[in-house]
Amino acid sequence: MSVRILALVGSLRAGSTNRQLAEAAAKHAPEGVEIALFEGLGDIPFYNEDIDAEGSVPEAATRLREAARGADAFLLFSPEYNGTIPAVLKNGIDWLSRPYGAGAFGGKPVAVVGTAFGQFGGVWAQDEVRKAVGIAGGKVLEDAKLSIPSSVTRFAETHPADDAEVAAQLTEVVARLHGTVGATA
Image 1: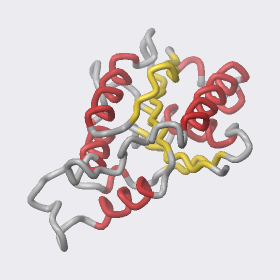
Image 2 (image 1 turned 120 degrees about the vertical axis):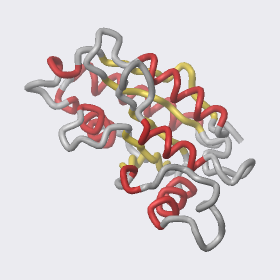
Image 3 (image 1 turned 45 degrees about the vertical axis):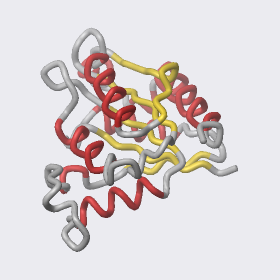
Image 4 (image 1 turned 180 degrees about the vertical axis):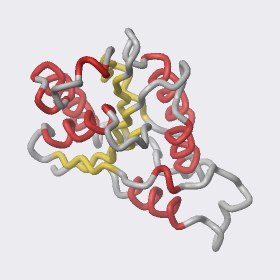
């Protein structure tokens, strides 16, 4: 069974180590798994119920929802900004949580990983992402975690895809996601 995993990256910076981590996950995905990186989180306006009405939904939000509905699972990459979740990632989760009771996460498996400059690798932010996604209807895999500390130095000269330890850990997370698709319904 082919599985499509939608990756959302909570950093907009072109050289983001979390984006590089997402690229590494896509590169090392097991056979039968496609990881699609969503482009355009930064184009989506902040969630506002006034514009989330038929005929008013911004095109960027519609693209996100369509990509999410076509996914079997989600892999979210979160850095840590001031001890918490980046606004752009939280905004994406908010858009995907609606319409209430029928959001795009809809019981699909979700894993949250990431890297950050600090010594804990962004665990606070990643815990907040898990909380938000769970409330939004996703089936959060609590045993599929990866927090990589000291991103600026660890990946200064090595792309995460070329770090054997990181590649193995990402592959394990993706394999857990793959294994839960269909089992969460």
